[in-house]
Length: 229
Image (cartoon, rainbow, N blue to C red; front, side):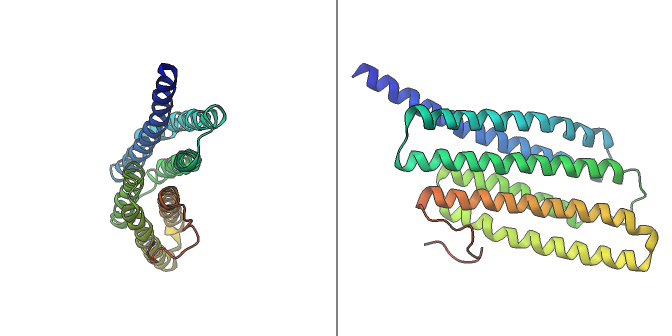
């Protein structure tokens, strides 16, 4: 009996380590995105370069979490709810690692963009950053709380990001048509906006995986406005 209780406690600790690792990885990606917009608004290329360097830490943590999940699957042979959590965690860490890559790509673009005269104040990009940061945070909060409604809210917010990305594209297209000399800077801003849109897609993917984990129902190919039930 003592050995069984010890094994159970150890198993729960290992599950908690995976959950804690996901939250820490999520916090790291949020920080990278937040620092990115600071680097853009303050034209701080040194900060942008630091974001690129810090992506290595995100990559390492991604590998560590995945290895813990695989080890737990192999040694503990979890069933039912725990099995869904561990397989979901593997997919979520992949989403977070790619978010880190996107944040690094944005930072690289910022370094170049900071060397070019600014064509207009940045308004919509900071709005996109704030929303995608919130999406990442809420998707992981939904994981911890097993909150399907919160996860569904994240999925609907992806539509807002798509609309902002389209708005930025149309505005910059007008700039390029009116003044071909602005094409280069506009293209860099478009690439940043598109990267933020892809980050939102990954956050939406995390939310969809949370819904699957809690309900056993896949919603990945459902319209984001469709209620889960």
